[in-house]
Amino acid sequence: MGKTLQVIADRAHDKDRSYRPGELVEGRFDDLTNPPGIVALKLYELMLREAGAALAEDRWHTLDVAAIKAEAGIKNLTRRELVDLFKELAGAVMEYRSGSKIMVGSLLETAEIETEDGPAVARWRFGTAFRYLAERSDIWAVIDRSTALSMTSRYGLRLHEMIALRANLDHKTSETFTLPDLRGRLGVPKGKLTTWNNLNQFALKPAVDEVNRVSRFAVSAVPKKRGRAVVGVEISWSVRTHGAEIEADPAPSRPQLAPTPLEEAISEAKKAPQKRVEPKPAPDTGKAPKTRQRASKAEKRDHPPGWEFPASGGIRYNEFWSGVARAYLPTPTPDLDMMADKFRAWVIGPSIPLKGPHVLSAFQRFCSSEKPPK
Image (spheres, rainbow, N blue to C red):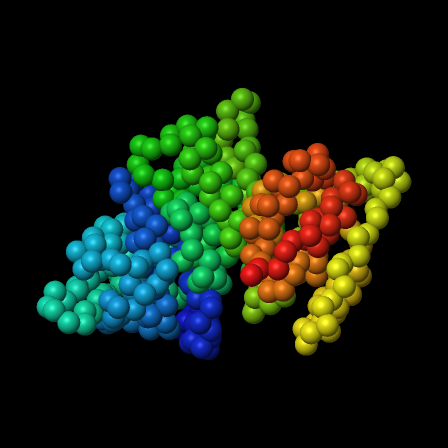
């Protein structure tokens, strides 16, 4: 048995994350006319979770249909629709690398669902190649289950899995993929998105945006050219540091994404010194000490990385901006990603740029003016 199955067994109690064999994450949906859609891939996540460390065994695995339908993004499925999802997974012929060999095999060998009235049960057996690789796997990806189940596109979910595997690697924060390889990994249907512009517009860019918006990863994609033709894409990643660091995820040296040069930041700071806006006085309630403590922590912050507020997406996993928001917003704290959108809309009126020393005090001012929810 490889190390991955032992890790899965040891961490079976972890309900927030799943540990997936890296060789399976690296599988490619090559030349499939109808690769599994986003709902089928979410079902696949539930199946892996249910199988646990037994996923390499040649046996039936069982899951109550009610448990499947209770998950976000899979609710209210009829049995007929569930059968169709299993057909999508059973028809997914994957291409895997195993040492110097390329293995080809299906995700599922067979599946069945009870059709009688009453509580329904789904049963399945994983494919032979799938079980072979899982049994010998020594690398794994740490998948955030809530993030995976909240994804809205196949491309975003597949990119999230790719980065989840690579985030464990020390001294590596980027990798270049050829366009055919990237299409296979993301699950682009055969004959679709054959040009770089279409691949970027309809698959890669939406996937990058979704991963940046809802996951713990910050991802960017830069095209690599040979002459005037795009022949590959360099994907870079970093792990956002937040309150609950993911267990067993090493934190290698990660550069800031698109930082402002130090000389420019210092120059801007001299031109427009930052004025800190004090938070509103805490109300005389039992929650006041906690509020004062949060504000005190925020006062210790120096300045935002690159003097820049994110131009798009949420700030829930942005350590700096989420910390400032929690310190200055009223309690209970509103949704941070929604507040980021409101702030970007708000600064359009006062014409405050999102980049520069003024943005921190503007964001503090904005959060302090937010009214507590009724």
